[in-house]
Length: 266
Image 1 (cartoon, helix red, strand yellow):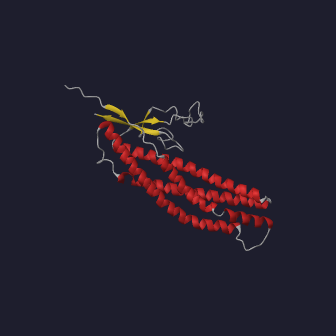
Image 2: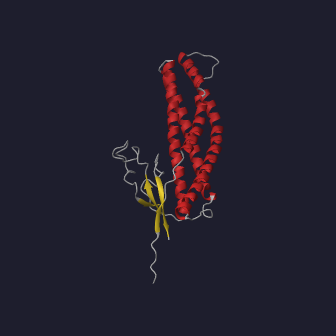
Image 3: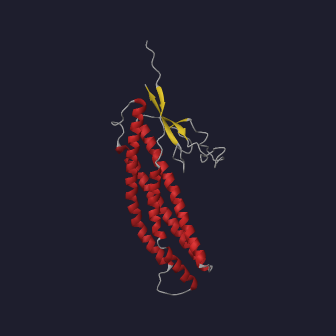
């Protein structure tokens, strides 16, 4: 009897999210936030008038915030189209890179297997999630602006103090936008990796970190006591059927880790 050959195991390089994708998500979110920032002068003037109890023809703070809210709905709709287009482009780019990678490693052409239709639902879900995050963030910034200005009006704070508080609220929005963009770009890429890999029968992957000071659980890094430790997972095998407690690479909040697929070739 002929002995059955043991399958050859190939671990492919990770396909990471592009910085340009993260930058574009951030640009779309900040574009919506700018509508709030555009009214900075009006808000400060209204707050100053209210503090001084001056009754002029100038709109009050409440009417300014209401006008902003009326504009943000259409802006979120426009953001939906831009985000969907971005995720579509990224999915096509990822699919081409994945086919190229597999072909180079084991000489198999995946054109008949990798179909764009397979990620359409992912694109739609990612779009919905990002629009919801934008809506939530703009609401948070508006609430923060309104609350802090009302508190400062009632306590008689100076124009300079109110201006600084307003700028701090805008900085909060932009900082959150950057975090959302980084997290969502990584999550979308991680889900693309999982879908593409499972499409061709991959069941195992090697957990791969960025191997830098920001990796959760790195003893000499920024978050040495983070639990669970992603540092300890580096280079270890996991299965999609039984992932770690906080999910596959890229799924935990702001996780930059990647799943390196394990291919078994007969």
